[in-house]
Image (cartoon, rainbow, N blue to C red; front, top):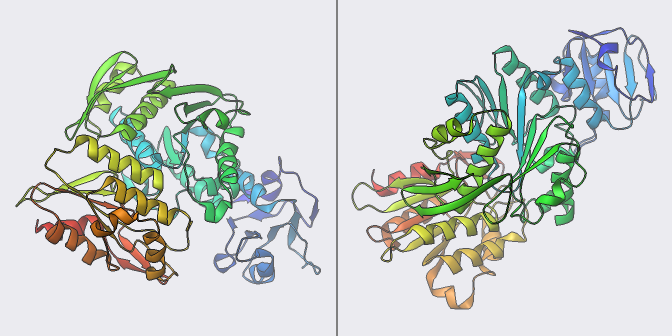
Length: 486
């Protein structure tokens, strides 16, 4: 329970109608779950305007309303707070309501198109190995030390986020690591949150369905760094040409990592094989269990963040040598009977798919084929569909185009758009099978020979398939095991 006036101390209001000393029992953005004493925040969303539910919220017990437009009729004993931007204000109010929990943690956020989940989950594992109680906020799951909490969004809404951070503080966590999506920056889900550090991995073609243009997507990522305090660090991949753009207007201390040029953290790949990466980082050579150039970048980001948080470089590298890949990120499953190798990866962008396939080509034997099973999600950026099909065909021996999460779209229409990217020279090695399970079984039992590599791309860690708004149980890893007869 908080006093309303305390929540509004640092808020720019247009007007306050009513008693600002009223008690606030909870902050709610969904009118259906309002209870007695709630503050209801009327958000103008892309689908629904929360202002239309103000009367309903009051009927359920809301005693304060945060809004952009005052209702024509104001009800007695209800306090109305009018602000310019309710989404932005919500972040500050939610943080204050939960006691500004981010200020009590060393919170590190990572943004970028690819590598967010792997990096944040490995940072979480590393710091637990170093002896800290930690929090995790990721696409795969949220976690408070050992307690696993299901994840519904890459970055939770402002109220859920601050509640989760407060629970971490209460549980004795000293560090927390979270993915920061471009959506969350634009929608102010992280507004009011204090970060000790931020990492930029890379930026490639994605989420144009939401942002409209690639330039808007870049600006969204940059907004995260623009808002960092001067006490924070901004660790960027300078091998990505947009890395320097991210920190043009940041107040944070700028640090860099690179495989190709001078940087705060300089890395070099000594060897890369199915058995892992041998790397030199800051003059120290060490073996890692992860595979591929893309993971070399993830490892440098992890090392850089850990040392910037004050950890001993040698101890960090020792602990990092035992880290294993995140679920559904280049996750390997081997057939017991004929040594076929299945690789499940979340690659759902052209750049991610290209990185994974190039890595497989680098580590495979001369007699091993690459068979790729790939689809594209529905109700998402459609422009990448033919591009991903072309990449799969160019870098694979055989390709099966199949469904991913078609959502509300016709899966056959998605596949037709992918087929447009298949080069004529690759028609014969490409097959289209709408049913994803059938596609995986066909790849394993019809196309693959002993020892071949089957990449199943797009869904990674997900345990469902979204078809016409219904989420059916589906896990690429379990289907691969079944196809292998493991």
